[in-house]
Image (cartoon, rainbow, N blue to C red; front, side, top):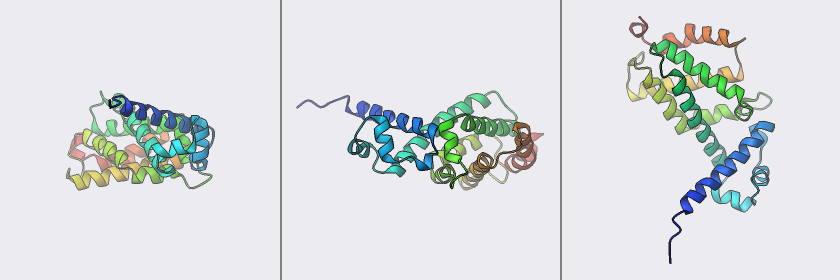
Length: 197
């Protein structure tokens, strides 16, 4: 019996189609209120089919967040590629990420304040987000303040995610205010003094 050599690709396409349907729903309502039955209907599949690709809502949410985190990381990396000053690279990276989340109705719904924002919980628990932010911290090329051990970089990455979630839930007055806060309070803790001189 011949093996279906396209089966893995079909599964990937089907999963992406389901995540695209979820994205559409997230643009219309807070992510925390979107149920699996709504996602199945939006994707045009049965709930049984949906559960074949995602065992539960948490698995679907995780897959969605990881896909969007990778996309966002590429956008941030492209934006800061030419910024050589570590403090400016940090500020531009955070501002770019905040702007991208805020401009996306689907992503901003994860940080809605009418209910506990599930985006913060997902960001804190996601290994993919942690790895991407750790990569960004390492890209600052400063031997990060306090050392560049894996543990230290990991703590810096977790803290930076918390700063970003905080700004998404409780934004500054405007972008200039957020840039000032990042420059005064975040960059000095993330970038050693000798790296900024």
